[in-house]
Length: 141
Image 1: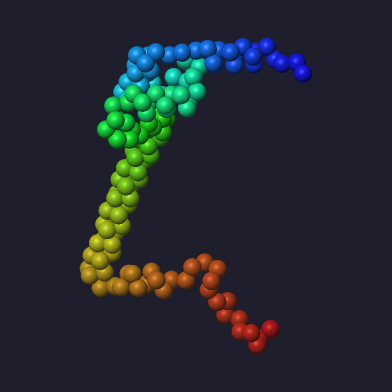
Image 2: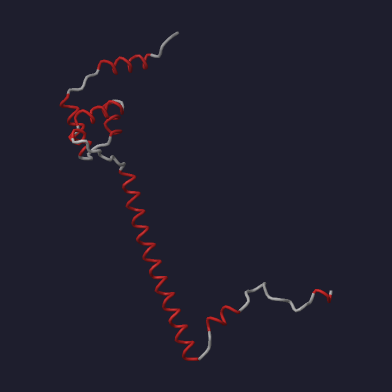
């Protein structure tokens, strides 16, 4: 069986590489300060995610204090901010609509007292289109 030359070189590089503890500490500090992400370190230095997380476990100040750091992708943070803005906008619109409804209810109430007519009751009795009777009885067919 003939092996691929690229695969062999990748395996050799993987086993021969060594990173100093200072290098690892520096990368962990960058992670803690959110300057880079784990995937950035993996791509830049051609290191597995497992190795980077081992460095974090070993060299992180937060790991020593038994504090978990939540690493959130910047795109997730941006999405959350946009969704929160959208919620605020929708709440504002709902508030405006509620004010309009309250205003209309008050206007109907004033009109009812001024003209001595029960507007709400009359609005409720009005049949919607297509549901009224035709005036033809069943026996007349």
